Amino acid sequence: MRPGRGPYPLPLDTLAFAILLSVLALLVLMLVLLRYWHPQGQRALAGYVEAAGVDLVFLAASTLLVVALHLQEPLGNRSSFALYRTVLDGYWLTFAIPIVTVGSSVHSRTRGGVPWLLPSVIVALAIFAGLFAYYYYYGIPAA
Image (tube, rainbow, N blue to C red; front, side, top):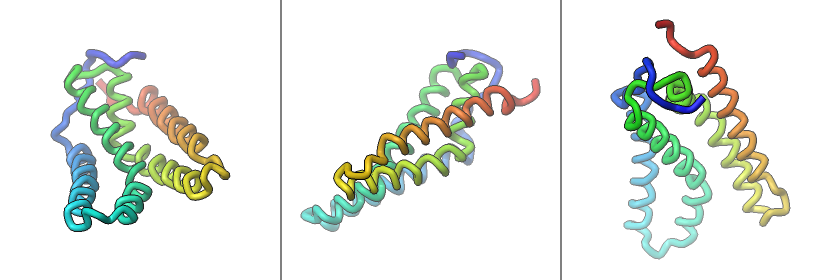
């Protein structure tokens, strides 16, 4: 089940990848503008990081995964295709980001008193594993 060469295309010139890049770029642009317009705004930066930090990590990691898969083999095997679809179909990011954002926020606001960060990450990984398994076994296009 290792990603590698196969018959399934892993293109980067798709609407889903463009949307992924656009959202990541917008969040980075917002950070740059915040730092430019409010260079001494530590509370603003802290609010931004709390609100968008998890999103940035997920979006950046997802983008890097898809690009790495494409660069490794533009035509991938079942595992490559399942990873590619798990990210670019958007279901994983749609559910995992808010779950981890809430878990992280509760954890940080209670200073670890309500330790929800690790469980929320585990839930996000479980969602990833479930979607990967679905695409691996059922989401492969007919040859």
